[in-house]
Length: 329
Image 1: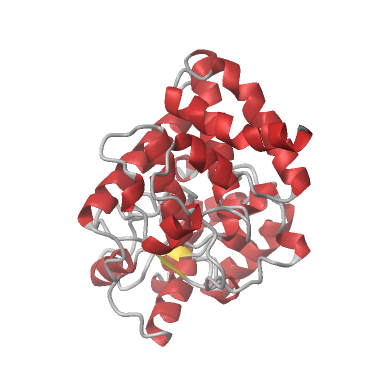
Image 2: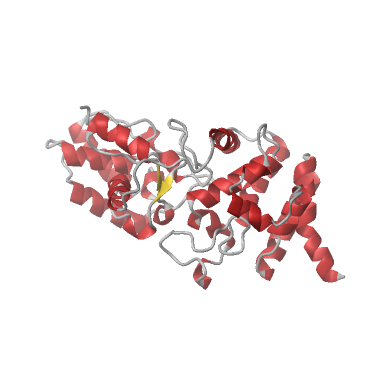
C-alpha cells in the first residue's frame, strides 16, 4: 500500500486528508484538515482547491514542507473554467474508481475531473458517474462521504444506464469540451463556440424548465424554490443523468460523429415532444423558460449568431429566438 503518492488528477484537499489519515508523522490530523478546509471556503474566491495563494494551500504547503521537503503543490491547481462546479454542488463520483483506490491505498480519493459539469462518463470504466445528495458532503476528502453514501443506500455497482455507444459519444463530447477550455483560443470563432456551448448547457439544464431537467430528480434540494431559479445554477444543480442528456444533445448540435438525438433516454426524448426533432425544433423546445431568462438568453444567442460557422448551431439559434419574433406579432 502506497499512502504517500497522490492519485492521478486527485485534488489537493483529498490527498492531504489521506496523508493525515494514514501517516502518523504528518503534522496535520484529519480533523484539522477538515477545519482548515471549511475555514478557507469562506475566504476563497471559488474553492480552496483552486486557490494556490489561499490559506488552505499555504497551510498544506507548510505541513508538507516539514513532512516531505521540496514537495511542489502547484500541479494540483487547475485554472477555473466555465464548467467547474462549486464545492457546495459537487457530488458526482465514479464508484468503480473509489473501489480501485481502496484496493490500492485503503482510502478513496476525489478526482478533479468529477467536478466539471460536462464530465458524466468515467474515462477509465466507461460508466456514468453516480450522484450523492448535496447535504451528505462534509469532509475535505468528500470521497469518504461518497463511499459512505453509496454503501448506506446499497447502490451496488454502477448500473449501465446507457449503452456503450452512448458512453462513447459522451466521452467524445467531454473530450471536445476539455480541449476548447484548456487549449489557447485561436481567433474569435473559438471563443464564440465556447460561449455557445456554455450557454447551451445552461439553457437545457435550467432548473424545472430546461428540456433536460427531470421533475422530482433526487438531488437533495428543491430546485423549484425561487432561490435556485438562475441561469448559471442549472448545470450545478443537475444530476448526472440530466447533464449527460444535455451533453448528448450538445454533441448532436455540434455534429460530433456518432451523436444522435435517438441516443437520449426515453424520458428526455419525450420532453422534446416531436417524432422528427431537428435542430430548429430543439431550439424552439429549449426556449420555454421564464420570460426574463428567455429574453436575456435570446440576446446572448443573437450576439453569437453572426460569428457562428455551423449550420446546425445557426438552425438551433433560429429556432430559439423565433419565439421572440412570434411574441411581437
